[in-house]
Length: 261
Image (tube, rainbow, N blue to C red; front, side):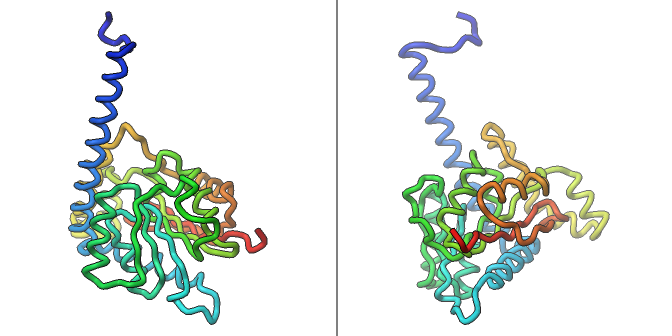
């Protein structure tokens, strides 16, 4: 049999199972490693802090008049180890973080316990599976850099629309290009100086390593036209779109679900 011929029969089933098991193990290792690195970088990386403030301000802007923050239910999709999620809960909102990776959810729950946040919950799950939450369960939805890594980001946007109540708001942030490119550092260096570019290595280098390791999954980098079209196709009205994060390497979309559904 040629070396590149597909395996068949029982041997093929076994090989496929082994390959799937290895890929699953690698994904878990990457997730744990990502969570550890992200937790180290997050409080030290000013770009995350600015993005956190930007997202929180938009969530606040979407709160109707005379509604208390504690009555606003926010879903953080693809919450990872829960840093953004905790920040929203600390701002007074009733927040649920959702992530498919058990290790990252476990780390996030540890943060919730350490900070004694009674208005915060974390769940392991995949939003595109319809039974995760009921329709219209949330007042707002937030998704920070989770669309580009999802195998079906269009389905994730539709699922976010489904669990959002009529008239509710959503904030989506997605990478517009691969961050681990030296062009990003050169651009930051030209604009803000060598010190700022070196500071960005704190995040760019580990990000590039994780991107290379997960290359088999693929990534979805969207420009303005593509991102806007995807969000509208999912049923949202786009209220605002802007460049953000690392010299505009990401796009932020503020959107709203029609109140007439």
